[in-house]
Image (tube, rainbow, N blue to C red; front, side, top):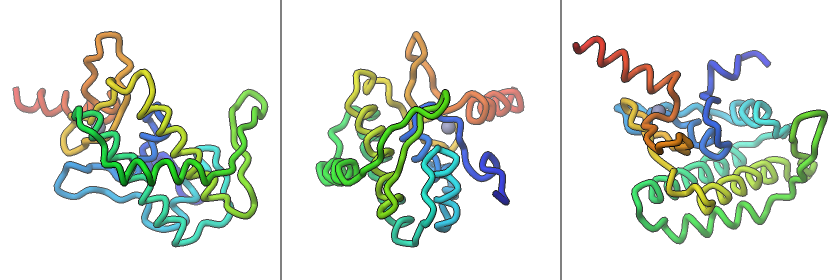
Length: 184
Ligand SMILES: [Zn+2]
């Protein structure tokens, strides 16, 4: 691997599906940052996630970005207390149903086995399934958009008081703290 994955992507979101949506960052800012700029980047992200897809095409990249935005829109709708778009929900369910990944315990890590014929479709199926568990799970009322400057990234607020405001204390939380110090 030529690039360090943590320099290219934000990998600190606890929820897999939301970590995926963070491959487009600074969503509410002046210049959103697309990090899935080419198929190699998608392959890199998938590998870092334990989804080892060998061949990633431009079509795969397009499918991945479409799924990512579907997850983001549904998550943001839920965070706002609104009904998600039914077309988005259909797309999410279709991608989840099309995957053929098999979960496997390897050593002390959970991993997935992808098919040789549709590895990226299988990987996207894993991401869509993870999204379904979160978006329709018992903690769905804890889904939030980050209040960090320009971020708006999705996160699951697992704090006891349900009062977390940032997708990550290390990035957005720190930015807000620094801005406050500079302003005082
Ligand atoms: Zn954030």
